Image (cartoon, rainbow, N blue to C red; front, side):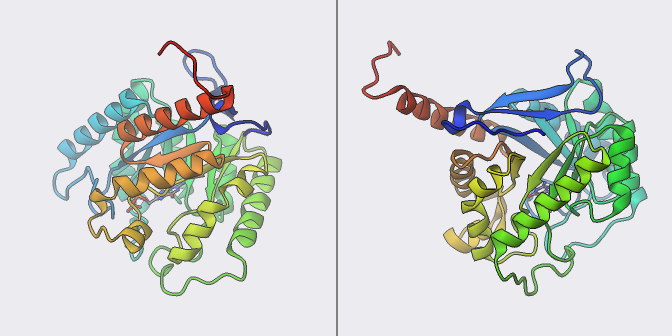
Length: 310
Ligand code: HH2
């Protein structure tokens, strides 16, 4: 199994993600310490976060902008770049597989040629299969492998999966989300799904409680606090809180692009609780924040007072 079982300070915990197929340099896995960043490239005209790189009627230059953006995120330090062609914001309209493929395939091909490790953010097995053939390495399924064909695609193409929890469907998920015990129910879903996928032969599984996907503000906050509980399963945990609506609900920031401060605060708190991957729009700013948090944790772990030369 991937992830970490090691105790000790969060920044020195070792994480690994087994890739079904070797990278160009022959490595079969991604290895990192502490929390690594998954940079978001939304090739959509309608993403909630305002970062859309594909304006309607502007396809060619939209793709170019998306490729440039992905390259920038990698330069800034993203371990993985996540490419998506369907907005799953609350109330979003579903797009056809053809439309999604038209959006993401040219971007994935170009970024894979540059050697980036890519995940494809999709709920559709046909899109996942084509994206993996075009050079993506990881399937990021916000549908949580509820379509059984998705598991088969991961097994046949040798791709690890990010399994995210969502209650309902994007069109209606925020109407009246309800749980008896949000942490226990979602933990049980993620653990069972990850075990089933691993038993079916999916090379590796990352678990994600799905912040904002069929959850109230309190549900989201409870899940973020419970990052530690999810990490204690030994699975690699991904948290994606970047620019999401609950930040507005708590701190009154109506414009999604202005939610960086809230995003960083939440992600640092989750990193300290053992989140191994953080899915973010703003890689450079998160890189800085994580390095400072890790530097402080290192000094704390080595024993104060600090007597280094720098
Ligand atoms: N959130 C979004 C999309 N994909 N994948 C995972 N694993 N976890 C998440 O929390 C997650 C996700 C929604 O954010 P974004 O991509 O910025 O917006 P949109 O769906 O509107 O494109």
